[in-house]
Length: 168
Picture: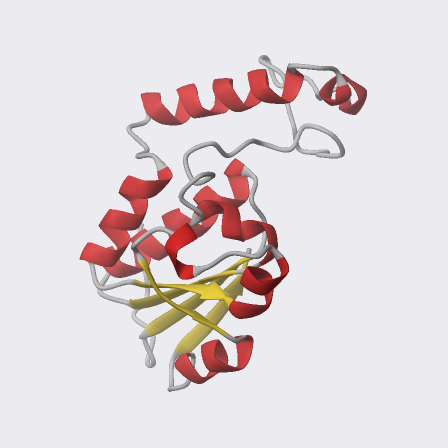
């Protein structure tokens, strides 16, 4: 693939993760890890249900959304009937299947992904509003979290030329 060099290459990405489903959290982690691997400064802000990805008790127990997910497919590519997702055990089974497929691709669990991101210089932040709302303290969060900050403080970190803010 021939990629044209931009006159103004990307220097920083600021990613906001607001959802706690496997597919949303892993999209955030893959983008942040890809950025640090390319030498791009990465700052990740977890808010609302995305806080599950950095909460010690939840981070490696994420689920996928089976109800109301129009992109959900069954083996063979057939659409997944949304009503099936409401049956007991279906969400857990689909989540386990997804994790098994990601494991086959050597995708690390959330805590190891955070290790890789921070080892590459990426920064992880938690949202103060969400932490207050869910009654979470810094001790409840993974050690990867630098601080619990407001969205205004996160925006201040996003300053500078050639910066992109990505919302997942």
